[in-house]
Amino acid sequence: MTTKPDEPQQPPRRRAPAGAAVLREDVTEAIRAAVFEELAAVGYARMSIEGIARRAGVGKTAVYRRWRSKLHLVLDIVSALAVQGLPAPDTGSLEGDLRLLYEVTSRALRHPVASQIIPDLQAEAARNPDIAEAMQKALREGQDGVATGIVTAAARRGELREGIDHDLALDLISGPLYWRSVVIRSPKLPKGYLGALARATSEGLKAL
Image 1 (cartoon, rainbow, N blue to C red):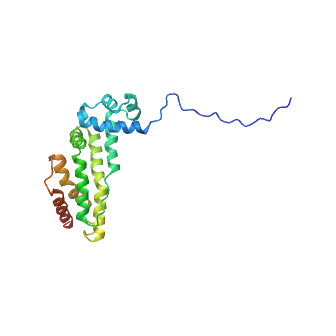
Image 2: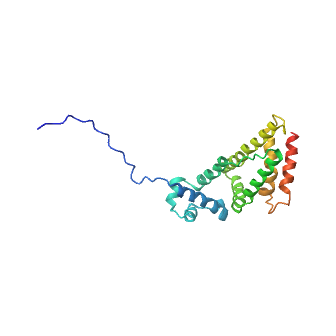
């Protein structure tokens, strides 16, 4: 009886550990959407993992596989806003860019969900430094890239001088609309407000 020479042994194929679940993206997105809806409906303090799971149509385990607490869940979602940012206007003029930015931002801030969530998270931020840091990052960085692009493009066109104070420009661009829409929560902007704000901000930036 002939014998075959020894053949190299192939390492056994590794199997995923029993119970290891692939995190489905559609479930993750459903949970994220449910968080926004739950925040708008009951606020951060009363929000629960149970309520989020029920609204998303999933079990609590699906939420806990992705985030270990409601704090981490909200921090993740708020921080993601900074990454998304806003579309950079490119109308060919400083005033036009500002007007377009204000139109997009105004619609976003007046959205029923956003108008409920932002003030609630601001109140919670006063008690929770982690939420305060995430809010600051999301709100500032979300506007920072767009404002920088507007100022840079205007300087390239000769509408603004080179080297203006970046932080002051950002405050000037973002502050007034945020004040009216979020702080005093004006239910409706006066007719022609965004156009007037764009003109005034444009002149203010030119004075820097």
